[in-house]
Amino acid sequence: MASDCLFCKIIQGEIPATIIYKDAEIIAFKDIDPQAPQHLLIVPRKHIRNVLDLTTADNSLIGNIYQVAGKLAHDLGFAEDGFRIVNNCNDAGGQTVWHLHFHLLGGRDMTWPPG
Ligand code: 5GP
Ligand code: ZN
Image 1 (cartoon, protein in one colour):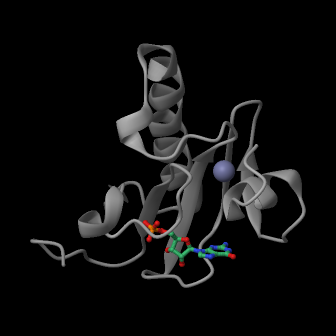
Image 2: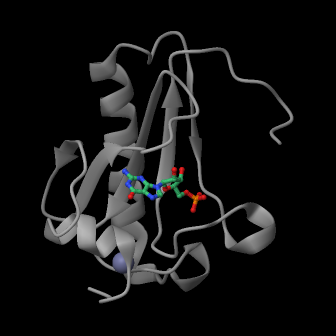
């Protein structure tokens, strides 16, 4: 828990969010500014700044996040059509919240290259 972190506050229930999934180490909630018909943020409960701070101790956590992403895509009905998982890292990568999170985007055709 980082006291000045928005996502830690959502995890603690101090700031409201539409939570779609939670387990012992992960929560997923709706992005406040959706970039697709379905846009969730999948977030470890543990405060990790971004992928640059991951250690081997986090390997199973990251594996679980991807497994949950696939399960949510399936449950939300866009797995077969296709979807995107995005992680923005540091300023040039577009990171604006400094707690590791993975965007799960679905419900429309995605373009490539990304912006
Ligand atoms: P980033 O830009 O760091 O990759 O993604 C941060 C995401 O957090 C953005 O898509 C932004 O819309 C979302 N976000 C920012 N503030 C809030 C909030 O208070 N609640 C929710 N649910 N999402 C937020
Ligand atoms: Zn945090």
